[in-house]
Structure formats: structure tokens, C-alpha cells
Length: 129
Image 1 (cartoon, rainbow, N blue to C red):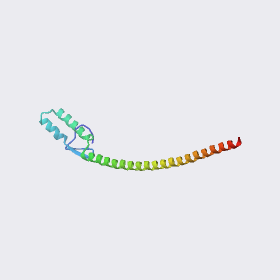
Image 2: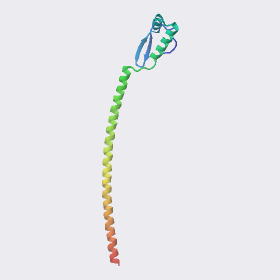
Image 3: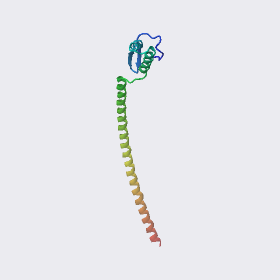
Image 4: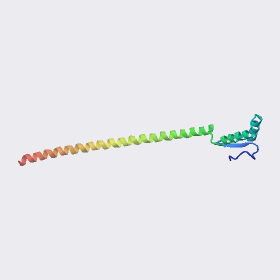
């Protein structure tokens, strides 16, 4: 909706505020204000200010409901991602435990082999002297 001055407008003015429509009749509003003691200039300025306020974005119940719905979808998505991450962490933890276990086994073999090797070296040195 245009924000042009009220001159030349006739009848009711429909102003769409996000998803709700507000019915505003600026001429009737101006008439009421002038009957109430406002000058025509004051009444016109007030009507223009009100029309501008109606035309700006205003959150409606439907908008709040839509945001709540989006938040619920986001919560579900986050819960799904959290579950997937937990499963992946459990899987990675299992692989790490397996690798540590395998590394311990390799280290035991290496340590045992080194002990046998050192023993063999001392035995050879004993016979060589």
C-alpha cells in the first residue's frame, strides 16, 4: 500500500499488516477528530500517522503462531542432529578404544621382543668373552 498523503482518497482504506488486514477509513477518522475539536491539519496529520503505523509490519497472532511452528520444527531438527551426533560420538569412541587396545597389544609385543633381544645380546656377549 502506498504511503501517499490522504488527498484524493475516498472511502475505506485496506492496509495489510503482514498477514492481517486492518480496515481504516481515513476520511471518517478525520471527520471524527474535527468534530472533537482538532483542526483539519491536526486531524489530517493524525490520520496520516495512523495510516503509516498500520502499514508498517505488525506481528499478528498468526505470525506468532507461525514463528512458534518454525521453532518447533527447529527443535525437532536440533534433537535429530543431537541424536545423530551422539551416535557418531559413540561410534568414534568405540573405534578409539579398539585402536588403543590394538596399540597396547603391539606395544606388548614390541616390549617383549626387545626383552628377548636384549637377553639374546647378553647371552651372546657372555659366550663371546
